Image (tube, one colour):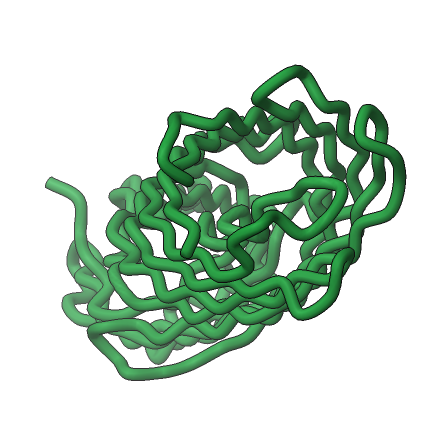
Length: 249
């Protein structure tokens, strides 16, 4: 059985792709509400590790060999408003569920350590803006997102910043977009883990995105009655799926 860390902060929030509905100009209905579902998997990098038991000092020295990966899901609600023909502002709240898995290397004189499963449940809040320019058929956009994440178990909060430059093309009632998501994030967590023969050990960890950039491919289509469906795939070293239904008023 894996051992469990009591609390954690997770990086690479899937909620960041819950950005503005990108089109070339403000639609007739400037205000929108949407509901989204996301999944994301990515590798993390430990930048600092402290363990309360000095017998585990070799593990701290070998932190570069520790493998860490997150697998999270989220559901969220977003509100957006076109304040100008080419400027959209938005805010979103997402409920995060999932885990971060930590795999320890083999150490001399130690029995193999079990994987640590970190509870990554928490809440993210996103706020940002998208600026769009171009023609009806071909356009470009730049989205900025500020994200805060609060872990359910610990109540600790960390922040991240995201930029998404993208290009898009109109296709009848829909649009297709290709974007580059860049996110620089660092998070901290502390918790207890059970180590064979040593018992409970307190771990303090600082982690960051192992890969800061990924590709986003999105398609948005009109379902009727000012209702829209948007699907996005995050590709590269970070992988994820985003589904969103929105209604404009």
